[in-house]
Length: 303
Image (cartoon, rainbow, N blue to C red; front, side, top):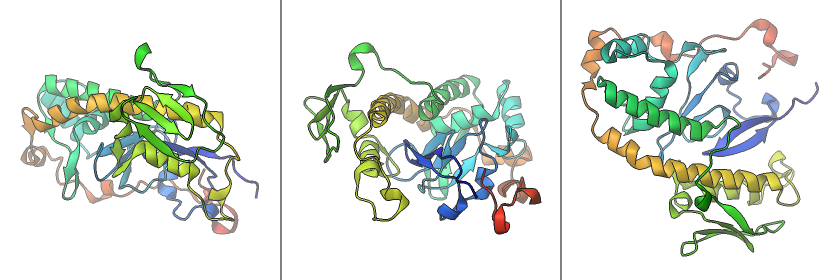
């Protein structure tokens, strides 16, 4: 059949790439996630190592840093992918309205690594909840953006100070000048916090550059790349530096909030409220597939 139009996906932490949504070209297509990917969806992605333990994206995530959880179990923001009764219990405890995005924002702000995955402490303190949700929504916006571009104050905005070569040979950092060096090209100011920002155990800027410049196996789709460094990559890099800088500024607030959560909502509280144990059906993907959605030779169309 005809080739589907490429779509934007999250291929690595903070790394957006193009993908042809055809399962014949994808080793692990995850149709249960494609079926709930729409303009309303937000995917939460667990990561390991240094950096934020939870990433969020509006794009379809194809990275393999950890478990991926959609905020909604069905298209059009239907059926939040939360423990049944959790939002109502928190709303009653806090005396506030609690939306699914509020819960995700709180989790983004306070999630911390735990032996079984991630731990998200909950609070019954309205002031702490509102501060955490506000911080988390800011972090969600920086991670997702959805076409908007965050900006740093005038004197701190990164600019291209020396033109980037057509094929930058390497990426380096000048700490004294706070400059990102791409061969003879130069971008500054780039705070050291942005350069050292890690996610999934790797430095984000180094991984982003490597995914575009490292040699690919000949004859593969990955080897089909622009012959020269395109201008959109420069714009994406400048935006990425801005995002990492702003997220690094939010980290101390996040760590402070997670370290001392007042009036904790305990597992015993959730069991008493009937939120725990979580029913087994809620841990499985909702069935959103219909027979007429199958493609040629029984293959399931992703979009």
